[in-house]
Image (cartoon, rainbow, N blue to C red):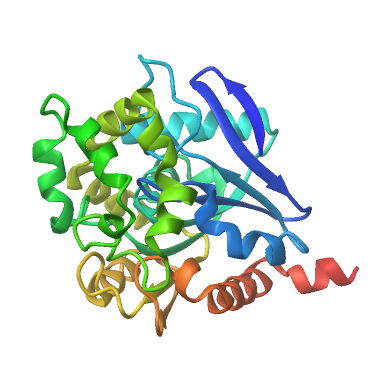
Length: 286
């Protein structure tokens, strides 16, 4: 992991490979580890930038006055791209990261050469109804501390009201050690998560969808068919209708975390999209 100091705060990220740049965006209470099965294979042909966004599982807390609204997250991404001297990227996003990716693409379409989305918040779902209670409870004094204590119980992490609906392969031990350890150990990380949750609203994703109707670059949507509660297939198909140039693929045997449950299929679909739309086969051959 590398560290970069931005005007908006310090961010840790992976930077691996060369070629067309892919920017990976994860969801809430997640981090770069959600892409761990993909980065090795993909970095043989592409440059993979994998930041830890300040969404509750980041190891470096943001400044107390950091703007962690959807617009603020977009500012963090702009600052990261500027720090890395990147004019354009292909964004690959999942879960809550998909919402932030849409919002970023809507406000900075010139920076997004392509958009790849898998099961994610969009349209009138931000957050899913399953997590609506979280927004109601998050500001109760001591609530995130209690969450942190419960997150130490690995069997609790795989229950439906926590992270059990995200993947049919992740274990409680993996969730604790790969993702929520910073949330458990840092009050400042929990503070960041509270700020983020307070800004979730469908008004942001609906506005992004309206703006993205004019987005002309190629979009790939792959949707796990076993995601019945958070982001069902009907939502993914509605999202596909937003875009002018879009490919939509159901993925069998995957819940929300398609990259976790069906990593090989995710890579196959993503590489096919990149070859078709960015002539990568010809570029690599030359």
